[in-house]
Length: 405
Image 1 (cartoon, one colour):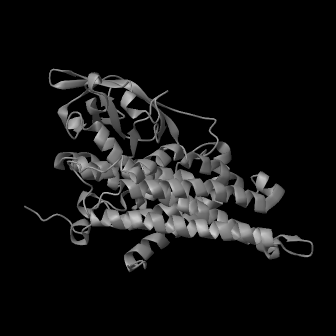
Image 2 (image 1 turned 30 degrees about the vertical axis):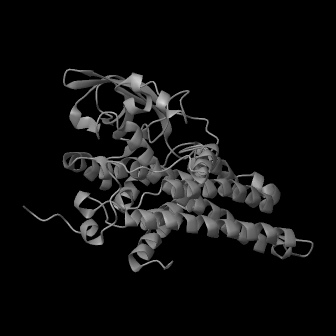
Image 3 (image 1 turned 120 degrees about the vertical axis):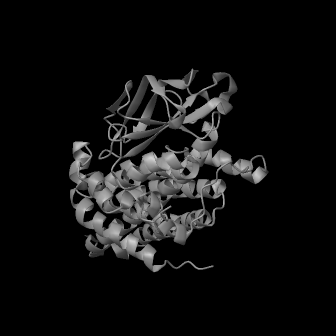
């Protein structure tokens, strides 16, 4: 088993780390206080190729593998959670779904501009009052002739007011529960589509979070992703990808807490010595280092499994659950190391603490993941093959343009 990173992975990580260090970290505190998204971030991420980092070159992406996606998410959340959230919804929950389930026409029309960063994408599953209980969603897509009439409202949607494309889930047959859900590609310029922002959040304040409402939106079969009734399966496969980005990002948040705590502990003097020499401070640093190492390895395993084309629902759940839970713990310890200064925005650790709380809620709460892991352990749950699996990484295919006919 080889844990080393190849030259391409190292270069991609360095590129994103440099971007985050030079262009994000110096200004993110200001935008967090404003509770606004820096308008330069998305265009700059597109310019650097980050928004299509692991999409094949033939579809406008950069052609890197799934491990690289995890490394990128770690570096982005090391700077701020809001940038990793962009990757979770644009890449993990939407673009990778198009790569897995889309027709060639859908990949050309929707995936390619997303991978190039010309269009931004979001994922519309959660509804007001309907969070983890997905099968009881209220959105409907009624078949009328050769069209679907979409009605519904989605809540807590990242990039709601920024995105051009939405992956929207609705019931085409309400009597069938989860088997009656279908996935659709909706664009922001369609008549009947409205969006708005949510303010007053605890964390991820420098990001865009909002709602998407559809009123009598007309769709055709060309907007349907997969077949009728496959929406629940598609949503769950999307979450396997999105949770990987969340877990990898939370690993970066643990690292941020560790690095900031070490830096502060080496400078802060009490009782005549730097607090780095106090045993209980050392204990906190040791725990954070342990949590980072474990989270990193768990997420690396998921990236490796994705590269092999092996379904990884259980492994992704473990990695996301562990990393997000321990990012909260790391942030609590980082605030404690900073003492009273950790309680102010003079240092970034109070922002880390606020941001960390989101990770244990979205894309499967910690409680949902506990139940999933128990069911796997008891044998109550098993992963059945899907009609479409996320394709295994093939460097020759991913990195080459398609041959001309």
